[in-house]
Length: 396
Image 1 (cartoon, rainbow, N blue to C red):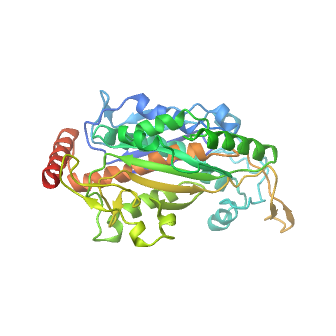
Image 2: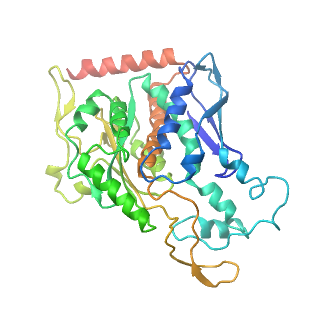
Image 3: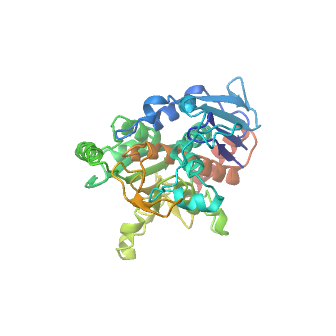
């Protein structure tokens, strides 16, 4: 099964990732990885760090002649800003007497709890590892599973439906058409917007809201709509809690910095309705075979994929590093003070959508491998094609 680990600090020399368990024979190019890293850096509301970094991943192992070879893939993303932090983040030489300690925690961040948990006398190590800069390594790692799935007809995409007070009135009319073409078409359409929205009015409102928040020294959160198309029925299982597909997807999304809520389909809206207006009725036979006319379940029933597009909604809180400070205190003196500002975005919701796409890719890839099995692309594709054909025969 596929698993990965990331390492590195926001202002260290580099970020890295090791991805283990990828089948052999997955075709990969530098564009497959670096295009996703470039997408993560876009979006109205990003901060000064994006003007410094141009993220590109170096592949150090696991590929030969543009294909995976079944061994771990190691990735390296160098931090260009490291040259400005060699003293503050020195790895061997002790500069603790020269560097000012950070002892004022920011509300809403990992600062205070991380400081206490790990016994530091300086918040800087917490800031540097808990930073969302780490998601660059996750996007690089997830891009490998994304390429694997794409070659099997499974696509991942997202768009933004809400940023602060700006929200679409209803799902855009074009959404169904984009999903029919595959979720990567959805991602491409969203990427044409500076805030990754499909609704032009909501886009204009969001840009204005971000600009206003920036002027006021504030930040904004929002809601991300993630879709996965091409997943056949039967991925995941109801038999044990740790094999439930919706649970694995929710865990992957909630692990992203600043994501505080996840729902599958229109779960919270459904909670206000009677069951007769919630559950997706079933149809079979004819040219369309097994189908549902609605998708309120978000493509998952009984914790398994049901063949419809998987729909996940993620709520991102406003970034906790504010130019206009909130009340805090000094850990060294216990004196009440205003919180400090760490260079940051004032809205990163569009970028978080790209991170969310990367996070769900290994989850779906593992669900596929659990169902289909196989160590190389040829046998995996053959087995998946046979499974899809079997489903067509049974329900047409």
